[in-house]
Length: 334
Picture 1 (cartoon, helix red, strand yellow):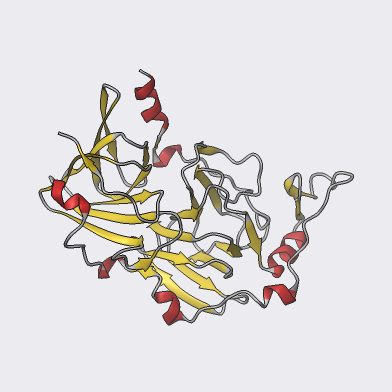
Picture 2: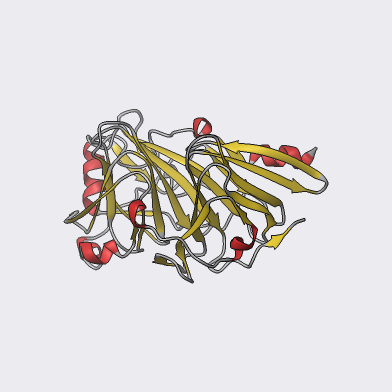
């Protein structure tokens, strides 16, 4: 029974992802004030100590999400580990550089990996609520660094960042006695951060309409029906070079296409982009079946058997995130 309970706690429906509207220091800044932050696996880089976290177990990476109404921005920031955006819903203008001088537009199904020590932000430029998943490398991501102007704008609207308290609203309560306020990065340090041309950043983007499946890969021996594997980020045969402590792949299948039961020595997180996927799992004498719909996420423990199949009437796409740069070949279960 414990195994059954374990699997249920590792399933996060899109409707079970809990937004925090004051996760970061720009929560009151006009243009950023309506954004939602989600911590799904691990805390991510939230600056709010009350942020809800769906799955706290360390995975070797963090998975969160951002939700934004039309024309709401996520302010310029940088990270110490890789940050990968998976556009789930909507259209986003991704911008980077200290003054947001470079731009590209990503639509549903696109993926981008932003390098470390590079200021980046994004704005929902569509006409509906936008939602993107974000993968951050490592269990301890090291936090977030903001461009200097983000701190200045935040303080103008009453928010400061305190070392021991996180985001603090001075409109509601004075800064506690003895608290240490985090100060903006110096202009000199900010000027040393990397920038990339649009052509250089394009090399770190997987456009959904330009993917080519791998012809040979370890899961090919267990495939049935019509299914393809695209390695988006990884050490070998990937669209984007890896080395960020995780590998990201995408399964694309027609109804009835899938992979027979296999196990891995690493943790694997499955994120449904589109369609409906059935995941049958087995472990310790127990077995079960879970349906994933668009936006749902499932974390499969090490050594659990699992099969995946696209079901329903429409094409399906399913992301796979594995907590190794070069995962070992899967083991097949009869």
